[in-house]
Structures are given as C-alpha cells and as structure tokens.
Length: 276
Length: 306
Image (tube, rainbow over all chains, first blue to last red; front, side):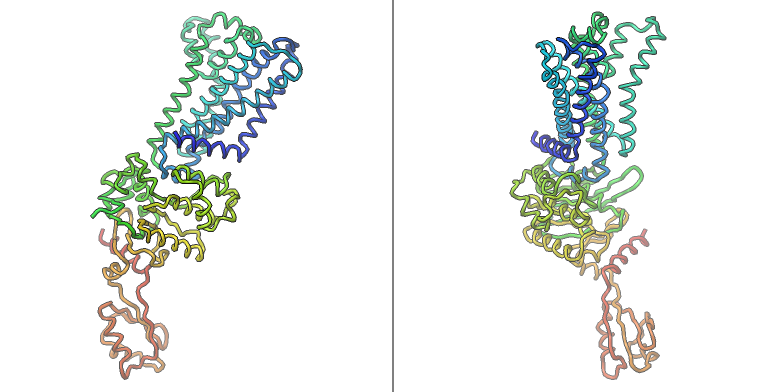
C-alpha cells in the first residue's frame, strides 16, 4: 500500500511540475465556463434549471475531452518509462510491478479528479455567482455527473495503460491511443446509428442494443447522465429514451466499473509478464 | 562456499540470441569484482538476472540468500543498482528524485542531503534533473545506488561519462563500501577502465565466461610476453642475437633500437644478459603486457577454441 502511495505521489509531483495539472484544469474550466454562459443562450432558459442545462452540455464535453486527456496521460506511462530507461531502475527497487501500475493509476486519477472537480466546479460556482438558485436535485445530478466523469476518465486511463504495457514503442502507443479515442468517441456511435437505420428494427432487439451501448463506455456514461435524472433527460431530449430505457443507473454504473477493472487487470497482467 | 551472490550454471536465451550461456561464479562479501566484456557480451543481462528483472532460462541465482526473481523484497532493500546510461524524470529536482527512491527503500529523508553531498551535487540539489549534465546524472545515479548502505552493489558501466577527478572519487566511495563488507560488481567494456581497482576479474565473451581470477592470476595464465626495448649508441644490432641468446621475436624500431618479446620465465635471464659486462646496450625499457593485451588474449583464446 505504501509503495502505491509513494509512486502515486511522484506522479502527482511530476504532473504539477510539468504543468499537466494546470493545463488540464484550465482547459476544463475555460470550456465549462464558456459552455455555461454560451450554452444557455440557445435554450434561452437561465431560470430555475440552469444547472441542469450545464450538466447536459458538460457531459457532452466530458465525452470528447476526458477520454482524450486520460489517454494522453496514460499511453506513455509504461512504454515511455521503458524507453527512457527509468523503468529499469524503478523495478530494481523493492516495489512490485502491479504496485507501480496501480500507483500510477492512483496518481493520474487524482490529477484528473482534481482538474474535473475544479474545472466543472468553476462552472457551478459562476452560475451561483450570477444569483441563480439551484435546488438539491440539480446539485445531486451535478455531483454524480462529476463523479461519473472521473470514472469515465479512469476507464480511459486503464485502457491507456493496457496499450502502454503491450506495445514496444511510444509512437505505436500514441497511434493506438488516438485510434481508441476515435472509435469510442466518434466512430462507434455513427456505426451503431447506421446499423440501426439499415436494420430498421428487424433483427436488432432492445437487448442487443443495450449490450452494444454497454460495450462502449462513453455511451454508458451518456445514458447514465442524460437519462438518470428526469429533469435532465427532458432538457437533453432524451426523455423518450429514458422512458423506454431498460438500462438502469446501477447497471450503467456497474458497466463503467467493469470497464475500469478489466483493462486495469489486463494491463497489470501484461506488464508483469513483460521482459525488460 | 556460499557467497553473497551465487550464479549457478545460468543460461538466458532471448527469442533468437543466447545472451548468457552456462555461467557460474560466486561473489563473497567485501570483494570488488569486475565483469568485463564487449558490448553484447552478456554483462547487462547478468545484472538484470541478479536483480530478478528477468528470469534465467536455466540455472539458478541467489542474492543474499534469496532468489531475486521470486518477488521477495528483503534482498532488494540491501541492494544498490546503477544501470548503464542511467536516466531520471527531468521534471523533478535531484533532491526530489533521491527522496522518492529513499522512500521506496524505506530510508529516512535525513539520508538524502548527506548522499547528495557525498557525490558532490549539493549545489544542484534544487535544480531540475533535466538541466543536469551527463556526469551529474551519473553521480545522481550513484547516489541512489548508495541509498541504505547496500550489501550488494551492481554497477553497470559506472565510470562512463565521468571525468578523471570524479572517477577517482567514485572509486574511493566504492572502496569505502567494500571495506565495510559490501560486495561490489562493476561491469566495464575494457579492462583498462578499471585501473586495477578490482580484486578479481570475470571476463565474458558472447555470453560465455572466458576467464575468472585476480589480475595477477590472469597474467600468469595468459603467459603474455614482456616487451623489452633496447637502445644502442654504436651500430651493434647484428650482434644482438649473440648477446641475448636465440630469441625468436626481434623487431627493429630504428637504427639503434630493437624490441624483443620475452616469455615470463625467460625475462630475468635475458635482462641479465642485456645488462651484463660487455653488453653494447645503452638503455632499456621493460614494458609489461597491458590490461588491454591481457583482455584481448582471453577473447582470442576463446574465439579460436570454438
């Protein structure tokens, strides 16, 4: 345990030093703030449900941005240290390989959580500063949006580690990471949509569709945030989906957790078998 | 005999290359041993095997009584390692880097400043490692290897990139640790690098151990000839073989100088002749076989034996 914390601490220290933390926080805050004020313009609704509108726009932002940031941080974590030669020295110390990996995960996750909390929190803070009243339900939805955003980030951290512990070169890891981002964030949904249009509801049942949605963590995240709370689903235009949704919030959350655990275990396994 | 570090008939095969073949040796406490060989001779592979970073294809290794690849940390806490071309994350300062490694070895943070001082990095302790020169990084590498008074030190090409003054102080630190009972294994690609600091030398070539012993023992085994350089004022060169008895290997350097190679057991006889009464020789130099020649000899005998 102590080894994990020592490694995590070093990752955070490095993140602070090379400005990763600062850059991520500023980026998220800037985008969140602009979405908060610009995003309410088209709906023309800066009323009681202002925070709900923010949740809708921020969760869309999260789907694009957090996987990208997470992959950027993580794809280099193993193969980069191996290439630079720092891994050889680290592993000669009394520390197990899984402790190194989990330590890095904890460190990177802290950076991501800090940036998300501060960046998105800035949006809520700005909203409060303008004198908008926000009820408890919105706060809960906002808090769960932040928490699930961090969870989504941690999924892509884990996926990035898996890539990083499998490939031989940093460049390869970078390419694969971009590919993964494209697939999960853009291509998967388009392909799914195309498939549904072509299929016309003939063969693909609701069960299969649910399975396909759970198979992409960004979809599971989207459903969790946009259909989980009644007010938000009405804003996001997902009310119809929400009524027919057979995927409940606990199912979606479980799927997201599974998406963290499996790549992380595979990464640990691949890393521990790797020869230096 | 059981040493702090035992290597028994160890082989390591990477997909196509036999990196180490049937190597055995034992290193006792308080000895500095040099592992010498060309690049690719298997030195780094042997060190990685001793660290448990890779597992032997066959054979076994014991470090301080443990199998290093078993995942036990007891031995690793008492082990210092300096990899070839050591590198650190450039974002942290020297002090932060050393503190990180000290924590992993469960050392007190109070150990950090004296170590930095010992390797002469106090003035740069709060600078980012990214700004360090090669020699400074090497010194930081040495500092981390010295954390926690290790009982076994594995140093992979430790003196490359160090200037002569630093090399001197480096060997002083090594000598001090050795006198406290540490086992030190240094690798090097040339014997001359070691400046006769190692009490014992293990020569490796293409994964095979070709020689193992003290430098004197190796010299004795090798039976390398000593070179004598003889000078004359008078042109007496044609008479030389007469003075020095029949010697096969005679080479004329210039008009009044010749070089002869003499086997160790003939050396004294030849010298007596050369300085005896009536000898035409004005001056002579005795050049013992150099470490490089010794090293080349062992590599050559192994190559031809195969």
